[in-house]
Image (cartoon, rainbow, N blue to C red):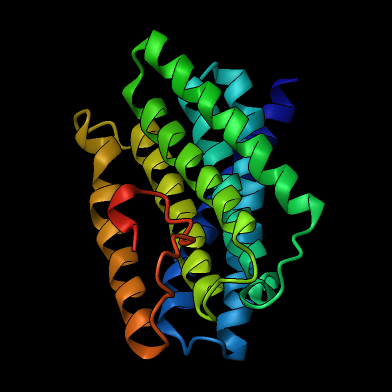
Length: 228
């Protein structure tokens, strides 16, 4: 069994480092181009592998923080990737049952995470739980308003999901490996850097495309500061 967990840890480290270095490349190249799509896909699968192996590894080291951060990172990566296939919600009100189910389960899981964090007084877990719950709730609200999205909504969701997944992965690495950084700085610094980056990308997208419709609140952003 120890061999299995050792292999799992090695795979987790390899996937995590792949995601860490690939994400900036995907951001740097021309958006929508072949290179962006290629490196974005590599990043997505790296996060899937890193998150899945983190869930397995958390059972071995009994780390609730690692478990729930991995769930959050996986959910946000899936949210960002799935947004690429929801462009039609700007004019089509039909939402797949799969999307409703994922957002509903996500809301239940993250709401439960917030409850656990409250009673356990675990601030990091509570923060990711709250952000995940808000994201899932906004997804559900967005699906309820399908057909009234603006044409750039999928892109805002794509940016929010992938960058939030990256922030969560870096936070987990910082908390579990960078022991020279004191708490809560080790937990907060990726968010302090990543959230302004998400906000900058949102402003850039809005400045290049049509403004959002009045009353639309479908961003799916992972934090209140990222609301439109």
